[in-house]
Amino acid sequence: MASFQRRLHGAKYARNDLKYFPLWVRRYAESVTEEEGRFPVSGELVLGFSMSLRQSGTPAWPRLQAVQAVEAYRDLVLRRGELSLGEVRQALQRLAEREREGAETGAAGASGPGVEDERHLVGMIDSKEPACLQELRREMRVRRKALDTERAYVGWVSRFMGHCGSEDLRQFGEREIKSFLTQLAVEGNVAPNTQNQAKSALLFLYQQVFQRELAFLDVVSADKPKRLPVVLSREEIARVWPQFTGLRRLMFQVMYGAGLRHRECRRLRIKDICPDEGHIVVRTGKGEQDRITVLPERSRQALIQQIEAVRRLHQEELAQGFGAVYLPFALERKYPNEKREFGWQWLFPARNMSRDPRSGERRRHHVSEDYFAAFFKRAVDRAGIVKNAVPHSLRHSFATHLLEDGADIRTVQELLGHKDVRTTMIYVHVMNKPGLAVKSPADSLG
Image (cartoon, rainbow, N blue to C red; front, top):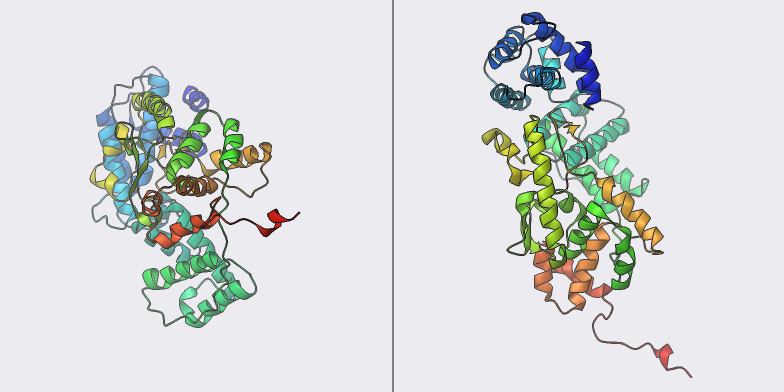
């Protein structure tokens, strides 16, 4: 056991794994016969161990963690990767998903004292949170809401609790919601989009979680000032461009060359890149809409090389028993093996594997938001650019420069994925030569 713990720390597992894997392996060791200081691992033994945990009322997710712990022991101590526990693990993953959605009716995790609290932990929901926040999280996960959206909604509902002075929000209604949203606009001086997000969070809580219809909310709206997007000129693009290297340089090329949002770029998958056809497929962009945009010819070879690098990384992780990625919506439940297919892998994977905050599964995610954004800010400063540019400015620059080159505005609208051409029209106002070529009267002085 001491050898396993040393190797576990050396393999750089997540903190929870370092804490709980030795405990599960110790329980597994008590159920099998020791062989020369080591514990045998086989599909039959692990299945029997999992069954004994189920009979004691242990839900599916802790049992899945136990199997993963035994897999780690197999890989690090026995070094016998040919012993596959994939079928046991996949079955437990499906059961854990059903438990999180409240749809399980079988014996795997029957209800009993303390089991419901364990289910909260299974879904990575803190049982110490207020009850309405736990209900909100569960409902959002059943509806497959994005993790960022869940965090934002939980934050606004928590602030609403503070406004009402109580955790029991069922006793409040339209009057308190109106007061809270109006206070945000008048005293909080928040942006209109921020107020709308708070309103959406409270409407979701009352209508979807509490199943309660709300009357018309006569709320004082926050003022929405008209602002032009920050656009980098071609000369500024040329100045900031050399600051980037490696993966960040490729992300810069793709965002500026294809007009992608920062989040869309981070979430590109291998199958979304079509070098032969010369385009990129953007999946579930803003508004959950798919679209096709241009693949920069300058980036073609670098993208092919990145795909091959991801292929090698994926093959190594498959050999180690990993290689799974997050799949959208219900695909993982319907097609449990798809998450290990190469086409679903992230084009820009993170350097290290991490624990999924919802499912608890250890896998490799895409690069974080700060990976590019923080470096972009420093690069802009080093290039001597004083504009308040952010990664999204590359998308603004893409649209503006296309229009300057004579591209049809409808074409630019499709490439950007705008529903309304009026949204695209804003770039006409920031072009170098908007409308007619006008000469300033000051230029004719003296």
